[in-house]
Length: 227
Image 1: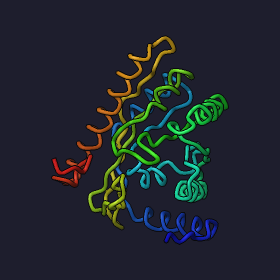
Image 2: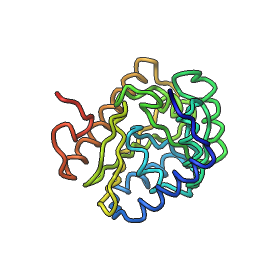
Image 3: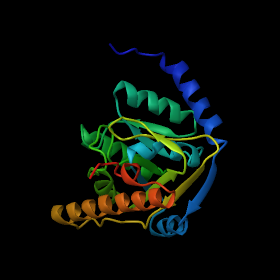
């Protein structure tokens, strides 16, 4: 039996928890030049990251009016309410289930001059399997996709499908940008699928390399598999 908590109270407490925890972190930024490069390609960006690495980004990218896509189910709605209290906007939907409506909403946000954030393997996984949404949005809007990931030297990985990362207090957190991607309007379905696979591989490698740099090994390294 699932216990449904009061969303307003829980979102207030959740945002407070993130603020108090994150204020103790030492944040290191890597390859921020890629962000400048992306801004040169398009004024508005599609930040793309793994669902399990969301917590750090909800702090490091707070109060920038970035619009995040959150799912309609209970957990997604609660998460959306929490990040709203950290200065994000939220749009309801999924780029997989009912994807056309979500894509239209995200296109409207980009056309208004705002950045968007997509957990590219969310909301339900599989972990590390990138959906097509970011690629389609880039094709339709000519906006650059910016891969972004993070790790923490000391952390706990939850047993959830995404192996959600919870950094410890007072630890070092590293945020790393990847090279931007732009999908042109005339790319075929096969070319877009190739680009999706390329992005998936690139973001996975970026995350694994960062975990190793932070001193993790074995199943502690993305994608947290036994083999």
